[in-house]
Image (cartoon, rainbow, N blue to C red; front, side, top):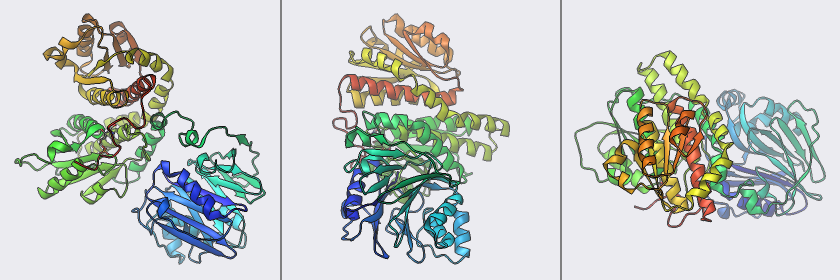
Length: 588
Ligand code: AGP
């Protein structure tokens, strides 16, 4: 998620902008850049790398800056922001995705504009140049009217002490100072200088000088805005008011799921036709997503699929096979998954990666890449990157099933409609956060617990138990419910709660019997289900929004994330940075 900032006032802009970029580092980024106006000149510096690598001695008190999280085009110096037009009259920074950029780029190139990057954002600078007729503000409004998609944009024009900004579905806030004003992706960027803030809404444009802030709608009508006083600390503000990044990221899931679907829909997405078997390879949470993928492949494509841990696959003996290898890694940097990709390549298997990070190492090791659009995840415990991996796999498999004629158009349409409803279902689950807190109080008093499920819900149980282990430090183990009687049932008693995911699929009745089994041994049973009737078999029932089993797994996952989060919170754990764990495991 890019971070953007603009400043106009009396201080050295390079210092204000540098501090703001440092404050936005937590958003995650791969490149950085700054443009500062001095008299009639735009001084510009940008590069791949971190904020500390940006050494500038620009003079001037008006400027813009950016941290880039790559979406279109590799993370490199060329694709870093700010961008200028052909003559260097305008500089812009952008966060979001310009959906119609390729049509705009073609049109602008036809009109003689020269592009220097692979980004969607660069069209903005050239559109300003194209529309400029002596009035920066007028050109800015015309430019915005041509854009489709999500954007927060900040722009400057050489020789003018004025910043223009626009917001549509990407964050942008204005900071009000005394003889200085700020605009940025979020409040921490300028909280060292002012706590007076105007939050822009979608479809608004701001015009900022050192002494004035004006807000308009996209049609140019003035909009009256309220100034809010912020009493958060910078650290609170980075977390958007949430106590932990993990909680913030759990709440970001509806948006992340929607964006992932949206971005996948904008290109042709399907598996190669000659595939006879799929081998998924991944680690940790990504492994659980791959297990969900296996169930989906077998159900919708009717070909065998197997899952491997990266740490095992890399040492696997050679067997007679020719699978399509699908590597799943949110960071794209996990050492065991990268080593597995190299092995798969050496064995001449076709390879595909699913990752959240454009330009990450895995993208260099595979034949094709599909991206999730979760945005950066700061909490060590994966949350939004997991559900977006699931939805990416889900979408990919449904598209492939239609292309391979394994499902009819009617089934496809029905399944896609259900998939598009997932972000709303997740939203609804977030509303019962309070009930989950009550259950967390109970769990926090225990030392061991079991998670049970069957079929497609089993990966959800595994993931729920992993979340609980890694952030609460309580022992949590997931089992396919039918396996309990082959051993672990011996451990079940009143001190060992059982958390069960019960969806209305072909194993539903069997799951009810499994609940009876554990209840009879004294376990406190927490069930997560779409069916009210399950309440008769459990001590507590968390009810899911009505759904088919394939999509019920998403809200069920989010409930289990919240259950782990609140349990860890009751226990006072270091939730965002659990002991002994790292966000990205780049060593073997
Ligand atoms: C999950 O909460 C963990 N942080 C961990 O299991 C993680 O999923 C695993 O290390 C794999 O990471 P990757 O997706 O970046 O490859």
